[in-house]
Length: 302
Image (cartoon, rainbow, N blue to C red; front, top):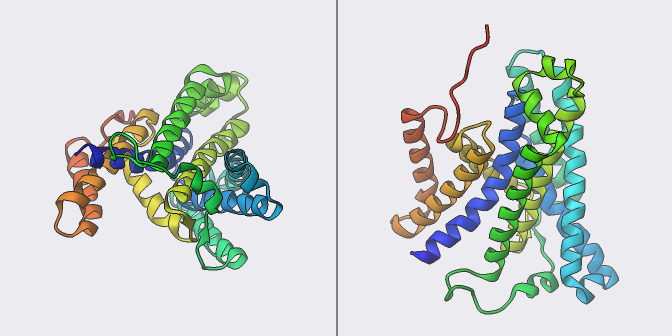
C-alpha cells in the first residue's frame, strides 16, 4: 500500500506541474491553453537534446549531475520563451474576441507543435542518456517502496511547487499577477503592465511544464512527440478536479489523480481502466462541487 501511494504521488506531482500552467493562465486570462501539453513535450526534447550535445563533447559522462541540471535549466528557458511566443501570437490578438476564438487558436498551436517536433526530430523515441540515468541506480528507498528516480521526481516537483507559491504570494510580480486576475483594467490604472504580466504568467507556467517534461523523460528513459497529449489531458483533469484557477487546487488535483491512477492499476482487473476511474471520480466531484475541491464560486460582475 505504501509503495502504491508513493508511486501515485510521484506520478501526480508531474501532473501537478503541468496543471499549474493551466490554472495560472486561466486564473489570469480566463482562457485554457490547450497547447500546454505540447510545451511539456518540448521541454522533454530540449532536455534530452542538450544532454546529447553534452554526451558528444564528453561533458555528460564526466559530470552527469551537472549536465542534468544544466539541461533542465536550458529546457526551462526554451519553454519559457515558447510560452511567451504563444501568448504573443495566439492569445494577445484574441483577448477581446469570442470565447471560442482563443480555444481554436490554442488547438491550432498544439497541432503545430506536434508536427513541428515530428518534422525536426522524427517520430522515433528520443532516449535519455544512460550516463545520467545511471546516477540514480541503486537500491530503492523506503524499503523498496520508491525508486531513486521517483524520489527525485517527487522532491523536485514539490520544490518547484513551493517556489511557485512563494513567487505568487511574496513577490511583486506575483502581486501583479493576482491584480490582473482580479481586474485587469484597475491593475493597469494602478501602474501594472498588463501585457508583461500576462506574458510572464505564460513563461512561468511553461517553465514548470518544462521541468515536468524533463523529470518524466528521466523516469521513463525517453520522450516521443505525442507524450504531451495524454499528460496534458490528465493535467487539465487535475486542474479542474482541484478547482481551475486555484494554484493549491492544481497541486491537490494532480496528487489526487496520481494516487487514484496508482490505486486503480493495482486494484482493477484491467490496469488500463485506471484512466476511466480517474474521470469517474472527477465527474462525481463536479456533480457535488462544480467549482472543484478548492475552487471558488464565480462571481458575476455587473
